[in-house]
Length: 100
Image (cartoon, rainbow, N blue to C red; front, side, top):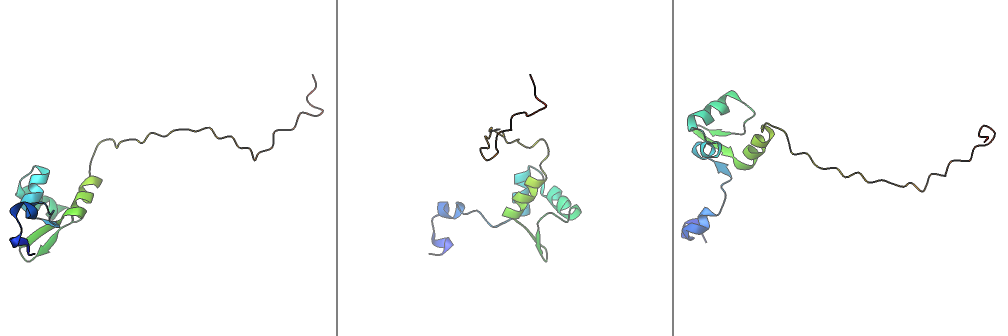
C-alpha cells in the first residue's frame, strides 16, 4: 500500500528520518533563522544540504543536542556491597613478637 493510499492517521505516526528547519525550530522553541545561524556557526551540527534544501537527520540531531545539554547529569546511585574473600588465608597468629 502506498503512503498516500493510507489513512491520514497512519502517515502521521511515522517519524520522519529528516527534519525541516521549521521542525527543528519548533523542537528548540526558536526561530528558523536561529536554526540556520547555529548550523552555520557550528560545523558539528548534523545537517544535510543539497543545493538550497536543508534537512537535519533526526537521530543524529537528537544525540548532538543531548551532548550539549548543560547542568548536572543525573548521578547513578552506587551500592557498596561488602565482599568476603574466602580465598585469602586468615592471618597467622603472632609468634615471638606478640607476647602478653
